[in-house]
Length: 333
Image (cartoon, rainbow, N blue to C red; front, side, top):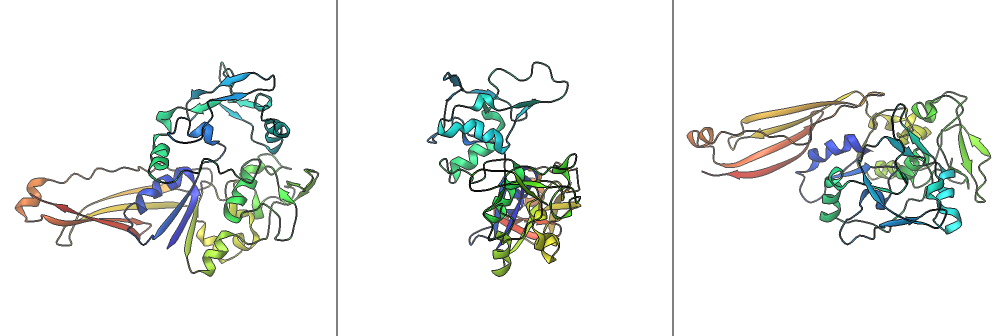
C-alpha cells in the first residue's frame, strides 16, 4: 500500500492515477481543503446536518447565501478570530471576524460576508465524493486556527513542539515579512510561531521546527511507502518541513519537488500500446501546474475489427515512470 498526501490542487490530479486500483487497497489519497466549514462547502448535501442560517453578535438571524468558490475576499482564520466566532459557546460572533479584500476589488466585501456557502456548481465533485462514500458531518478539527498548526495536526495529530509538551502551535509563523512562505526547520533564525498553553495564553513563542512522532513514522515502521505533494516546499502548507527528523532525514525524499509526469497508456489485447497521453505538472516553490484530470483517447472501430483486436484492452496509469494502477475492459464488435 502507498499513502499519498498533499494539497488539494495536486492530489485532485493524482486521483486519476489510482482510480483503477482494485481491492485489496493499494493507494490511500488524503486531500486537504482547508479553511472551509461543512456548512460552507457542503451546503445542501442531502441527509447531512447543514446550517441554513447563523446568528450574529446582535442576535439577528442571517440566512446563508451562495458565493463562488474563488471569491474576492478572505475571512480571517486566526485563533483570535475563532475565539470571536465562538464567543464562549454562544456561536454568535461571526460578524466580528475580520474580512480581507483583494487589492483593487470594488464592492468588497459583500453584505454579511461571513454568512456564505459555496455555489453548488463549483463543488460538484465534492458532492459526488460525499454521496458515493462516507461523509463525516459531525467531525471537527482539533486545531482552532490557521494553516500552520492545522497541517501539523494532519500529519501528527498534534501541533505540540515535542511529545511531552502541553503547549501547541496556535497561529501562523511570524517575526519576518511573509513568514508563511518560508517556514519550518529551514526558516530564517528570527522567525517564530506563537504557542498556546492549557489556559489559552499565547505569550510563548519558539522557532517553527518541532520534533515528535508523526503518521509517516508509523508508515515507515509498517513498510508502507508514502509521498507528500505540496505547491511549495518551504510554505506553511508543508507539514513535514516543520518536523526536524523528516526535514533533515532520509524521509525528506518523500516530499518531492520539481516536475512530475502522469502517463496513461491504452494497450491492445496483443500487448501493443495503441496510444499514450502524458501530462507534466510542477511542484516547484511558488508554482503549480494545472494537470488535466480527464482524457479522451479516441479509438477507431475499423482499426479494431480489421486487426481482430476485439477482446480485453488495458488502461495503464503511471506517475513519474512508476505504475500506479490499471483497468481492463472489453471491446466488442
